[in-house]
Length: 244
Image 1 (cartoon, one colour):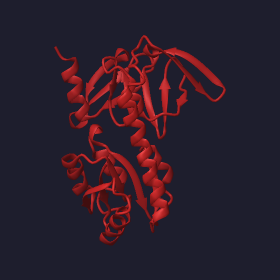
Image 2 (tube, one colour):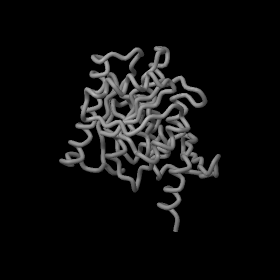
Image 3 (cartoon, rainbow, N blue to C red):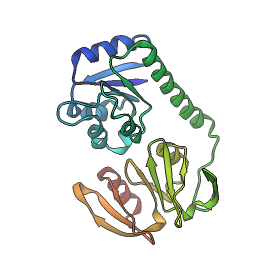
């Protein structure tokens, strides 16, 4: 498992590297002292995991993740001296949030969480236990006391809400306990398109497409009028898929 350490404090990077020697399955492939260094390293090295500080000169840890293209974002463990960012961290699908100074038992807990997540993903990949879901498939959804049995073709939008995904269909917006990445693996890419880090859209529900900032696109969904940005990288894929 390839990992990057991103922290502006050299002593903090050294200490974390020393602690990670206790986990031979994790290979530290690089270190970065700021977001600009880290962005290039993520694109070049394609790590599986980031140990990411939040407060750094220039872009902070959240801005770093937003600057990455959607298909290059690794798993993330935030490492920070500040506890006030914890809620926001999990909006970015962080696997864990460790407060400095980091000790070995707490790091061990976080690392084992990473291993469990990777094992879960690889198990699904290897045994192919679930079929791809298309718009004619019906799915059971339970949110609190409410239940639905809905055809996926009626779902116009999937929206990441931290460790949950909100489904938008009719006038309903239930939450399901699943990451957007895990859901994307099961949805048929012919019908459902990953627009950006936070959204998957049903292509059948697109009403209008406009050029947007930095080479992106802005789509308006039929009926609801919801506007969703397609990131620059995904806009290239979108045009390749759907152009004559």
